[in-house]
Amino acid sequence: MKMEKLIESAGLTLAATVVLISMAASFFLEHTPTKQEEAVKASSAINVFEEFRQERERVRQLETVQLTALMNDEGADQDIRLEAYRMLAELTRFMEQEATMEGILKMRGHADCVVTVHESSVNVVIYEGSGGKNEAAFILDLALRETGQAAGNVKILEV
Image (cartoon, rainbow, N blue to C red; front, side, top):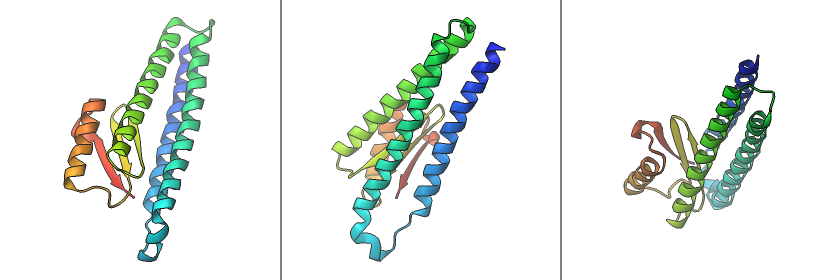
């Protein structure tokens, strides 16, 4: 029964994460500006990035509350509480990696960017035209170094 509670909570957390990623991918893929939109593109892209970060934060807060509640549930099985602790530690690690990479990319001159890190993927979304082959190589190296992911798990997207 208690394992079912953890699985249900983990399923909700995973479902929320999948929905967030799907929403972001759809939003970024559908937003393809024309030449006439170039004048407002920078501010629009920054707003898109900010909206994504706010939604990511909202989902992360929900996940954190759910996992913390499981960890603190004295009636829950010890294995469930330990798994909730492990999942929260992993989520915290992902958040730290995202913040580190976003900060480095901004210091490197990217107007804005969003990084998402998951168990087997890293997505780096940057403003179109802010990169090149050398910049893509730098971003890939940064992602590999910060996350320990395999190169095939890292995606760099320009919007």
